[in-house]
Image 1 (cartoon, rainbow, N blue to C red):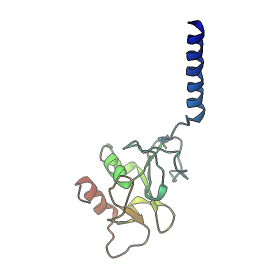
Image 2 (image 1 turned 90 degrees about the vertical axis):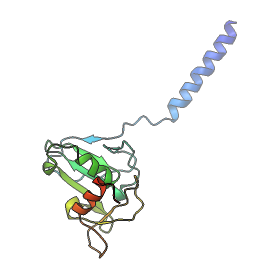
Image 3 (image 1 turned 45 degrees about the horizontal axis):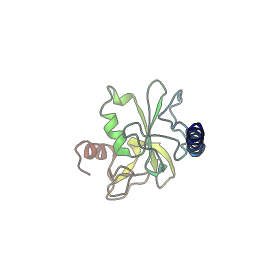
Length: 152
């Protein structure tokens, strides 16, 4: 009886060690404090988590960032998540917004970007941001209204 219990206990410990040795316990970043310069953070895929939908940001091509007046930077995997989160803020005009511009491969102010409306995005809002305007692209305000009214 003792041998059987010892074998089961040993197998259980080995199983736990195996699970813990292959798991990644690195904490995903939801908030980056002390960004008082209010510049976009260079994001590394799979290290950040969307503040609104809680998804891991695996691809920065549709990512955005919001920097609060206190210097906290929040991250979003899709501009639709940023827009819906922004609706809940008491003074949204005091928040600095950055969006990844696909044609410039860098973050630009979200209000200065032009938005394509039919792209495949992480949360399926469908808006891709660009620096250069094309005839069918819309501005930030129009994109924001479409997300808020669920008219993609």
